[in-house]
Length: 578
Image 1 (spheres, rainbow, N blue to C red):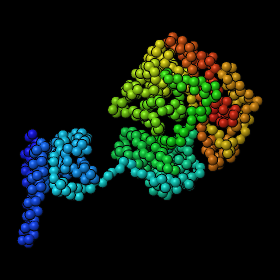
Image 2 (tube, helix red, strand yellow):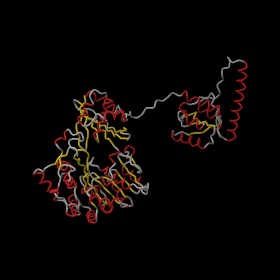
Image 3 (cartoon, rainbow, N blue to C red):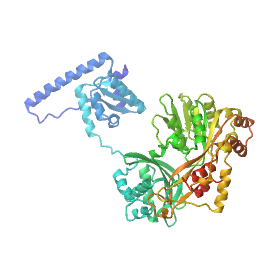
Image 4 (cartoon, rainbow, N blue to C red):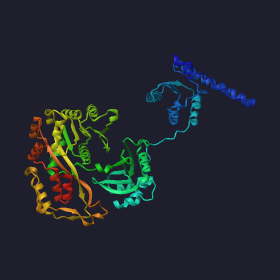
């Protein structure tokens, strides 16, 4: 074996590996004799190791005086080197040489292979003596210490807790930002957002100042203005925390960081976008509590819930939810997945991005930079033998076709499409080019949804309908199908509105706190399948069929909730009116 000889090492190094002679000029005769005897003994031990290497066919190295490569040494932590009595000593081109007391040890061979694979090097293990190993291990102390640069800068939980205690309502935020440094300003913005119940923080550079706005229960609220001259420091601090590139200002960037609130992790998804006055920043707060709703607590009407429950427990088919961004589709799908998550089923999701981490569910992240798209990801998922699959969004024919095939071949598939209501989903699939004959048997149920703000229980007040409102409410309630399972009675309705004290109520924001879903559930029954197979179907056709099967629309669902005092008539008309 050519590499058994030190000649191969010398060739790699471009020199030899002769030991360095020690300077003994100042030693006494006795010390010189003792040193000589020790050297002879070590030489004999070294010789025996060399002979053992020759007999076993393993290459041998003596590291005494050998120019060990610092780059090689850094490939293995000192603790691991001492644990397994091994260390990398030479790296040249794509060749790596590792010395070990026991090259035959499986743990040594496995680690050597891993180091080589990880660094794309051809690794070979050499036999080494105990004293030679000690010489090599001493070199770890001479390596320059590398300072670990962490991505992002932590925001301390204690600081957030302190700042949260100073915020009771929106008007408390701006004073909190006065006279503080930029680091504390960002911490204060986050702390106040958490305390008030914000889903998104918007920080926007304007001509004369910097605007800070919170999205609370789906509505943007102006919170504070800070001096324009602070913008550069603010954006740099945010980028530093989120692990974004400080010198990139002309392209959008996306990052993420985590803060701790009461011991629970809150992910903060950060997005920057170039604007004419500077970059706009949006930070979305992904709180675990946001997905704590159980399936039965989402707010479905009893009849709609019964229909949906009957379909989601079936082993195959497509469950589709529709609605604009921010309408609660992710929360609905996650709640259904949690309901279905049992030990005897395998659930895989494909998301862009993964917003919340779900225990017991395999979640996969789309990466367009690596051409890992919804379509390619879905094809890969189906090779993982799942029972239930969730695809974050169906937006093209390829993904739609694959989803339909999955639903027809024994999988339950949950996904979303962007349409205004449930009736628009089927025309949308057909416009993508999905075959009607395949879509009809694949679809099981389509949901449309929106989110309404709930009235605050602390400052709510009775509301007497105006003549115009009375006409509108009657029109909406009278249109509810007789076979819907609903029997609304306006005579017993309890219409409510934000009370006079809502502007100063410490428990809410302008009379509202929290949100409730409004839904419409369209079941794909035989009559719907027949219409789909015809291949020509409009939104109006589907709304007529939905009404015939007793579907309550989102607008009607919202008005029923207003009659129960959960929300106001104005809020229903703002969100759900066509």
